[in-house]
Amino acid sequence: MSRGVLYLVGTPIGNLEDLSERAKRILREVKRVAAEDTRRTAKLMQHIGSEVPLLSFHGHNERSRIPKLIESLTSGEDIAVVSDAGNPGIADPCERLVREAIAAEITIVPVPGPSAFLTAIPASGLSAERFRFEGFLPPQKGARRARLEALRYESSTIVFYEAPHRLSQLLEELESSWGDRSIVLARELTKMYEEFWRGSVGAARAEIEERPPRGEYVVLVEGAGPEGALSDEVVARIVREELTGGSSMRDAVKTAARLALRKEQEVYRIVKGEAD
Ligand code: SAM
Image (tube, rainbow, N blue to C red; front, side, top):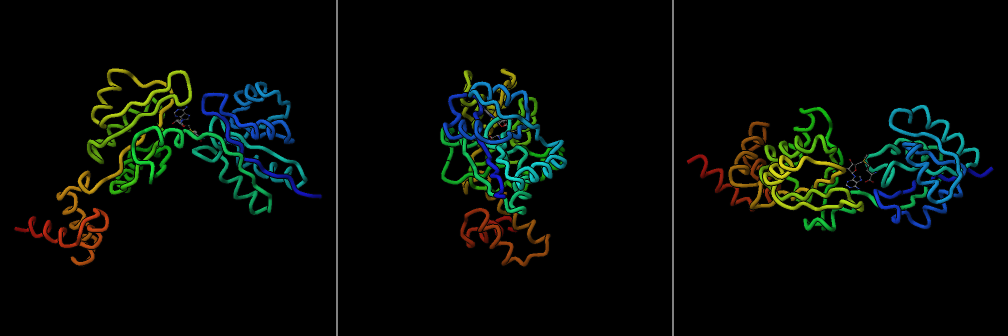
């Protein structure tokens, strides 16, 4: 008996018109749809006239669900996975299922739809040439700080997801870790109150103090540039940290030059200036 196919189906992040014809067809044709929130997906299924049965599949039950899904696929059933919105697997469960399906030699077919971060980037006005998707920061304070610290020298546009009740905290952390960079708050994408707020992190903090955040947000932050976060002071600090970590002066300067997009002679000049 031939095996079933696992379809990863992208669904709208707000506007139902964004559901593709192909996604509709697959959601009508498969044997079962594994959905993060069955009540929410039931509305989508009703909208497209699909009567395919739904099965709940979310972060809390994936471990017990996966073997059953693999068994159904192995016995020849085609299954579609959807998340509440956007692409399954993007800040949503599905990664483990995909890995186990690959191990079971199941064919995986992606059916792309909108993702909040890909919708936000081109309209943000920040560089879309290179970007880094970070999704949600971890909930614990220390882990959030550590993540931001690790990204301090990232020169690509950095993209986060954040819940409205944590937005203020995120902005405060961004300002204290990276300084006052350019930022875009992309809110309620593809929905009635879609909005792009553009400015600096400091101004964004003032803005949300005045107008408490509501709805869903993608937060896009300008990457570190040679004349941005990586001031002479920061360059000198990198060298100091590298030396403390046991690097030779030559290696420390090399690392700082690479991270700061500066010439090694310039870094030597900065270090020498500090020592004088
Ligand atoms: N799988 C989704 C995707 O492909 O984008 C992401 C799901 S994640 C659990 C939910 C987060 O995505 C929200 O907290 C928000 O940060 C972002 N998001 C989802 N829909 C959005 C929208 N319409 N406008 C802005 N952000 C959105």
